[in-house]
Length: 79
Image 1: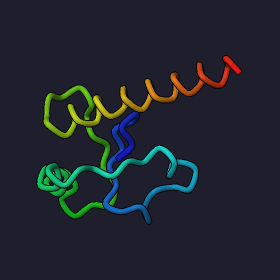
Image 2 (image 1 turned 90 degrees about the horizontal axis):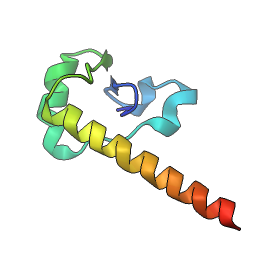
Image 3 (image 1 turned 90 degrees about the vertical axis):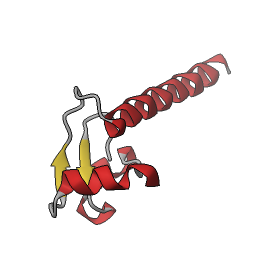
Image 4 (image 1 turned 180 degrees about the vertical axis):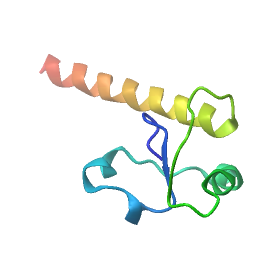
């Protein structure tokens, strides 16, 4: 899943090459919700404004990733 855009893919093989670095594997406890959303499709756009456990996880994960990137950037700029 791309936590920034809400794109959900069945497997990494369906992800375009340029987007692969932004893809994060969904934790095992959300697999039932993921399968329900996909319903046999390879790619689904998840509505990130809903309050579902998967969306909440994606928002938290996205914030963590952005914080880590900012921290690394500040660290690199100090040198």
